[in-house]
Length: 166
Image 1 (cartoon, helix red, strand yellow):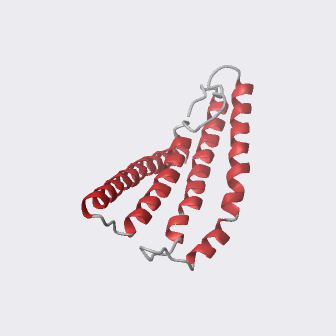
Image 2: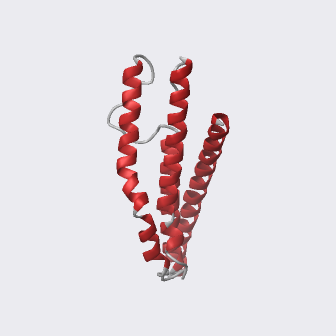
Image 3: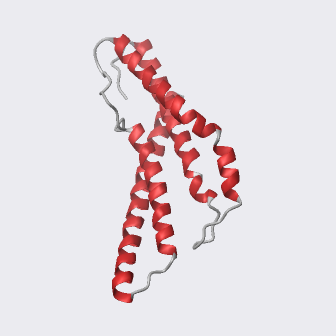
């Protein structure tokens, strides 16, 4: 079961990385199109700014989930990865608690947030804004999934007496 969860976590991470790169690449192309259209044609389609912004939102949130999985998210100090098990477990639980305390309320209130945005549509693209704002709870769920898999791996390594790693 743990091997399946590890495989699923890696597959989700690969998807997040690929999708983030895709969204940022699309944003780059759209912004370049805006610049060319502004200076060559003196007219920019109104949908380009909106679409570039939404690509940035999706790319940023999927990139945040990938950074969490890769243990590359911003932090003040690097937690210990070897040495005294007490410090390793303590650092993991502090990080896990911080993640849940920060992102838990975001996920808890996401249903109301999505409900408010579902009835609204974007000005230029005329799509429901919930298609953009659903990136927030999706990112939180992906991070919580990675955290759960990491915690299960930590428990397995502790029981087997193996070295701690991601």
